[in-house]
Length: 170
Ligand code: RP5
Image (cartoon, rainbow, N blue to C red; front, top):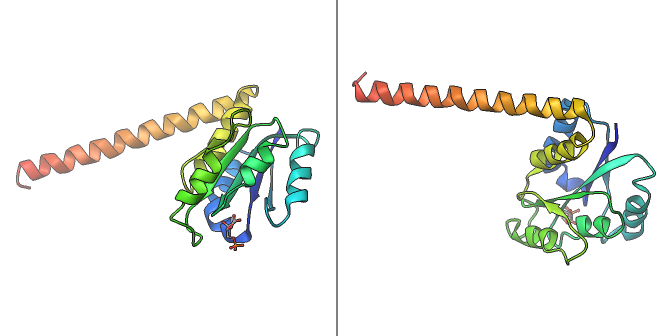
């Protein structure tokens, strides 16, 4: 199976990025996680992206806050899919700065941007990308959706019960 790269602009991003790694682990997706910055280590970021395909990666996740150019820099140096996580809680402007810097890519160089701090969805999207060609992964994702549907049905049933008890004055 192809690997997923999880690149973060700073080690201070790790608490937000951790759910992405945990989600990849729960799906048994091979991954590498690294700190690498578009501004502080621009050459390393470029070289990583340029060699990612030959190094066995199928998708890159890039998390950064503030002037969040990491996903864009990676995307400019590979045609592998790049998923951007704008980081919100790092002394920036609540994540709006990072969101705009990540999502507003120029035509020709797409970055699939998830919600501010949306690490879990970034990993799920990477899994879905791998699932295009990997039937086992597609089945795991179907099973997850099924679990989610059941969990919502249970929550709805519990809510209906509470409302019923309130109506009947219990
Ligand atoms: C960004 O600047 C990083 O991704 C991080 O979200 C933010 C702050 O980095 P540190 O100053 O905490 O290293 O590049």
